[in-house]
Length: 179
Image (cartoon, rainbow, N blue to C red; front, side, top):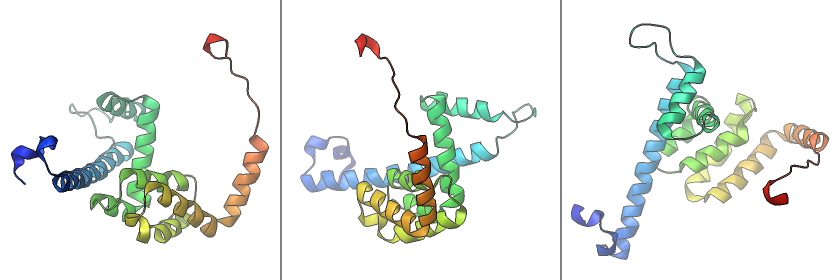
């Protein structure tokens, strides 16, 4: 496909558009993996300042990330935590992402589902769900992760259910316009 057509989707055939979309998805996945590695490094080991003074505090790393990505500090913190989890606890998932076989949303589903779980459970869940992940939609993958968690940590599921029942409540929050 000539490069001049790549920026002109109306000039492409349907097959060329599909090919281009696939290439973009591969690039996006690789970039997401590279971003996770970079955020992980920033989260665990902020470098000293150029003048040799001590490293930035974690809050400033979060704020720098928020500023450059144009996101809130809270969302930047979430991205930093997810990146650290992905790089340190889910290496096989990160490898699939780097190869473009899954999307960042697949990786995020797995990371979020395993937050607060031990490394053993997280590793077992990852091993169970990754073989089919490249062929699954994000919704299908999410169901696979949920089933794997129940299989790998049934006691944890019971505890979480009990905790959820104990902490449920009704909250009244006035909203604008009298709602």
